[in-house]
Length: 403
Image 1 (tube, rainbow, N blue to C red):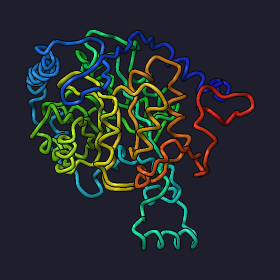
Image 2 (cartoon, rainbow, N blue to C red):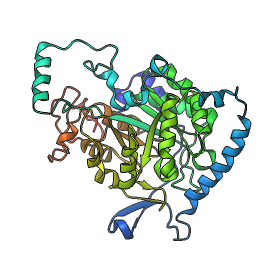
Image 3 (tube, rainbow, N blue to C red):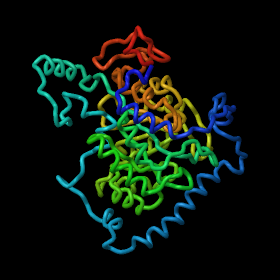
Image 4 (cartoon, rainbow, N blue to C red):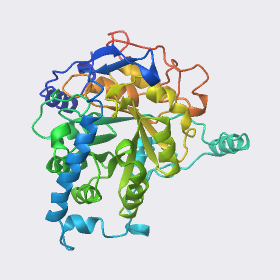
């Protein structure tokens, strides 16, 4: 059903993605302690003595690796060192490509950030004035974004390789061609199976097919030299992990802003989200995965959705971690998140087009209405209520139905 609605280019892209073979599986088991009676997803049941070893071991390993990297780029004329040595101000600052991609402003004909924006009619101006009068200026229909996390394996599933491909650039180009707004490219070989050369390849590949899609480097960042590596490779942004950086998060945010590199702060707990907000983080990703306990809490992002401002606010919030189907995606978008991050579920399967269309081919109610009990209502791109919720593949009698 999905393939019938694709053009030749999309079919070619899907064939490329099918080369990635998915081999992993989730298992469910009961958790205890701070989140009793929840179902947690993971591949094994670590003992209490190993819960913290993987993350801490990865951080220590990364710190050791960065000592060598710093030595390699010790010269003041080294491109990587220069990338973190210049302050970008005024017209020299790059556009906020990540933020604009997450909000899909280029697709909003009335957005001032859209270079092709059209003039507003008098009726639209009057409507905005009325909304402003009632304090609902930003309470407009939203567009959700789809972010793909490109990786061969994951720190959350030690020893498991669930996707195989030759170059992340090929996958990034394929995903963006299908409609992905942002791609995360993992560059830590030990934890995710990628490296910095693939980041360069992904940047070039994405630039060939899109002027608006953003490329974000995903790494276990512990040293400022890693920001220089990302900048030198042409990435639009980086991911900073709150549980890894701790009090140093503010310093990394400041440095990234200074050199013109956008950031996405990964948080899991309420305290981490609050700390990121206090540090003036603009883009925040709430993950269902607890890196310290090595456990998935499927409802964590859902529970923390209320911590963010409403539609159109200064904070862009996305959710990820163990998202496996379109129902989970739509549920998170309905409670106010601007986008969803999908990794393993979209890698190496034919579901990528379905996932992307489920996010992009609909509009969302304003975040201010997320508590009104309308989570199951679905709207098309014109804001009209859709018959649904739709599930499964399209039928011949309903070619526009994809869910």
